Image 1 (cartoon, rainbow, N blue to C red):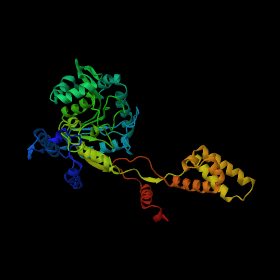
Image 2 (cartoon, one colour):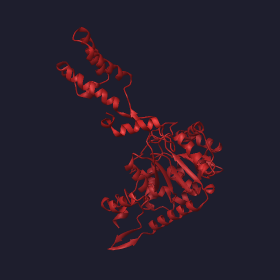
Image 3 (cartoon, rainbow, N blue to C red):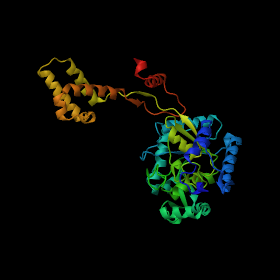
Image 4 (tube, rainbow, N blue to C red):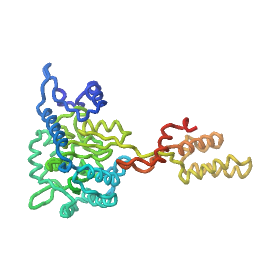
Length: 414
């Protein structure tokens, strides 16, 4: 069974039929359950367990009353920043406020929080990521959960020997890990997390023990602390995990490219927890990773509205000089404006951007002038997002109109 040792997993030619087509019908979380050995299909026991375990979790999620469901939500800290609750073009605090209200209205036992409350709480949770010495204080303040080392070791002992060796070689013996603290007289991992009733909100831990490291690295195994965080959620009997926004790191951990095994890190970390993944609609390729390797059901959300960016102050000054030059008759004043225009353009490196040097500008200023004017108009027409999108909230009519006009293009507008 070459599949088991293959870095590719399911070949790209097979994926076109077995994955891409069903995905167009709405399939997610594809699982290989058999492989050809000696010319015959052989069932792979651990893969069948994976399938049945996920099926059981989905059935339980469907049947359990909303008020009894225990949810967890991970938010991101990319790019790194001690106060940065982030996702691609998504306003996390306002979106979480909307989600808490919507869950409450749907019958979930979830506490509602305002945007300002979420911002302040998010800062405190992130402090535990940036300053691990604060984790015990967060635990004492009710802003953390813990996983006893004994529980992690019991799970760790069930992993294949090769996986155990790889993790210990890269990160050291787990009982000597820097993130262990004394909790009620026993060694334990502590993770910053806030309980909003039956919704546990927490930052995703750094996957390599260092903030911002190895986000897309599919070679470096995740740290013990990272795996322990996901195990804590499983042992917490989490009914569903929300990976909130584009994007986290779990689906990028090492393992096959497609058709993963139960012992590839993306599957090891999650176990059989159902994953709901709000994902920005314009990043289709990476959303495939979330579905294929992140075991996720993705929910596409809107991008922010867009509008022409216009020109900022320095470029606007240059543009004004362009038009001033155009209106002047030949003479000393026009020559002075020309010199000023060249000086300003060079200060912004626009000459280099357009492929001109001093000699070329001097030999044929009119060509440079025309190229500069056209370039400024292109810059002004470049689209820019109008802030961030809030999940569950439609943009204003004015912003939607601006976005539609950008999509239709200049031919329509003219």
